[in-house]
Picture (spheres, one colour):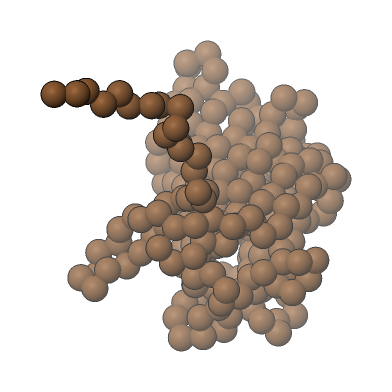
Length: 220
């Protein structure tokens, strides 16, 4: 019997599309993860800015019913002010300011460089209960030349006019006292109006530098 030799050079391993993990709610009420195509919509680069904002319909930004899930990646965010909080808020379609009602939770894990301190716990000072302020996504960020933070924000079905708008945030940064901190924030905008604007800023001082990438994720 003749043997067939497999030609590895003819085997195409080039990916046909970038994928990420999208959250889907099944008929049984369970949340599952499945791959969906991820499309880069807009990149914003901070340079001593008071805030970074994505506004639907402005500067090629899409933040409407085109996608059911949006993802914003925050890369090497560096602030002017030491020991301050990094935050975000949304604005409803036709709204006049970033003051949507938020209910949220916040917990964090931390470890100091010399190993003398560690923490894992809930932070009551960074959650909100039907409040309208900017939501904290990292505490006590440092502003030394080598200190920065990176993370991602997931926003689900922001164009809905039926349901509240859920969000998830995961953020990693160097705390001003030479500590590694990872924070987890989750909550919802308690409004049935569409959310079509997202803004990031520090509680004090400008955003010195950082890259913000807005992606849309199609249904899988």
